[in-house]
Structure formats: C-alpha cells, structure tokens
Length: 229
Image (cartoon, rainbow, N blue to C red; front, side, top):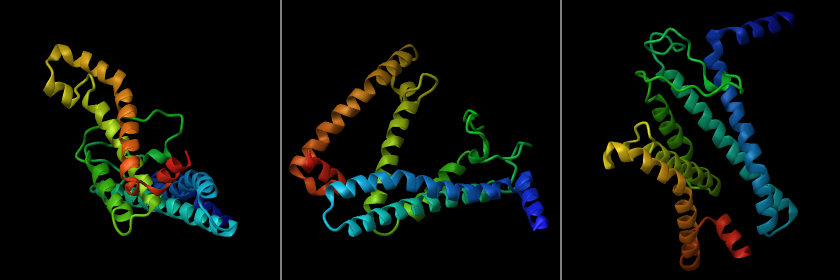
C-alpha cells in the first residue's frame, strides 16, 4: 500500500504529468460546477412552475442537474484534450518557440492574475478546441432547454466581450476603422458609459414585444416567469 501511495505521489508531483492530470481536474470541475449552478435553479423553477407530484418534480430536477453537469464535464474534457493534442511537437508540454512548460489555467493558484497569452503559432488553439467541444457537446442532437440556456448565456457574453474589444482605446477594430485617431478614445468612452443602458433598454423592450405577440418562441422557463408576473 505504501508503494502504491509513493508511486501516486511521484506522479502527482512530476511536472511532466501536469497536462494529463489537468484533464481529470477539468472533468471534475465541470461536473461540480454544472451541478452547483443547475441544481438550485432547477429546484426553484420546478417547484414554482411545474405541476405534478413531489417525486416527479425531484426527478425533473435530477435530470436537469445531471445533464448540465455531464455536458460541462464533456466540454471541459474535449477542450483540454484538444489543446493538449494541438500543442504538438516537439513536446506536448512545451509551446512552440518557448522553453517554458505549458501550465493549464486550472493548475494555477486561484490568487494569481490571469496572464495574457503570448501570440504564438498556437494562438488559435483555444478557438479550434472551443469549436470542437461546442459542436460535439452542444451543437448536435435535440436542443434541450438546459443546452439552450447555456448556449444563449455564452452567446450573450460573447456579444458583450466583442463589443468591448471592438471599441478599446488601444486598438479596437471598430474604433480604428470608423473614427479618426483623435476621436477614438472619446468614442470608446462614450460607448463604454452607455452600452449597458442601450442593451438593457433594448433587451427588455424586445422581449416584452415578443412575449406579447409570439410567446411560443420564448424558452419555456422565461415564458413561465412572464406568465407568473
């Protein structure tokens, strides 16, 4: 038993195994995070808006929680595995053009700042890995309400982040192409101060119009909330 424990300790402390251990950690974290996020939401929404026995409601909560946790686990595993494979020769642990080992974000201390990744031949690796994981986990088969909520949430975050990147003072593509040099900073400040107001106002106006005339196209959970209110 001591020999097995000693061997496992050596593996855990060996930097060469860090990327492979990161795969297991990513899968575990995906399952835990999915369950923690989905369980309270599914529990509240099911108890408030679903009809049926307590047993049937708990079964719905369990299925939604299991689906959310499973999908995030699969996505994290596919994403990390793809990054590991794309890191390629000469070694799966070293990025091309550098001598420093590639340390996955999940292995860094929580208190350390998120570093800005250098532009290397692997700059597009996260995009490719995300595309593959998104297609395999969320892009195929029947669109469940859980998957719809996850993808819509990600889509909204991508839009907000893209808008922020586009109007950055230090080289956002929209500011550079649409405005002269002196006005780029002023326009970026204006967009940053007013974008949320436009987003909130437009979103609520549009969703209420859709709910009034085309309620059947809204997600069932959102439609139930609207009906209840």
